[in-house]
Image (tube, rainbow, N blue to C red; front, side, top):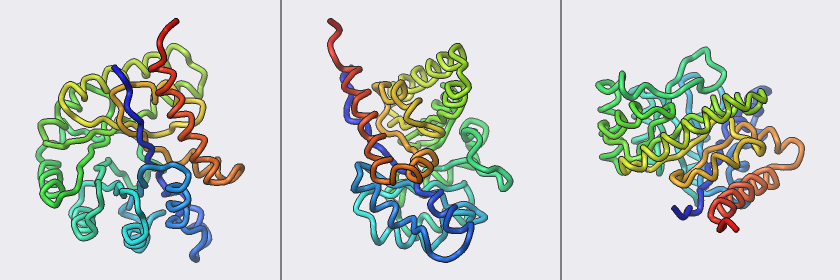
Length: 255
């Protein structure tokens, strides 16, 4: 299977985290989004949380006004977030699980167990012309549930794979990578567009980027952290290059 160009979505949440730690207007996540676009990002992701711990409502307004690339709004399945999404009309909305006490999204959405609750959100977003994505574990049952809900896109949670790789556990890394590969194939067989993200770094991205069924990776925290040392434009462009190299290498004929 020949691999198409893999899109890169850059999550700018943690630029806002740094801003909010002190208050004021700097650093500006919208400025970061524009730099990421210039450096090779195909889209921008922002998670508007219930407690507004990083991205704010004003950030979403300014992102919608200032971006030339698509905005992917990460949101919990709540009436407040649905109203905000419908009002702004971003290109995409990724429904994620959200707990007030968590530091970051800790796992995938239970699309199977939450069907009755999620159905209305998927239906209303889709009717408004907003591409709906569900952030799920790399599990066939969850992908089947996403298909039944009518979501056209799933984003596979790569956290377990990344944690195993960082810990140096080769057996667990291989096992979790196989799960991602299997889930991506299964999602594609259901005619779902398959994305992936969470915890990806320069050291872990290549095997994931080589999965042919993936259409997009969403990466944020690592790129913002790396920008402290090498600048945001370089941080994003290096990730873009690694993703492109992974696709080219996977397509290269075996001699």
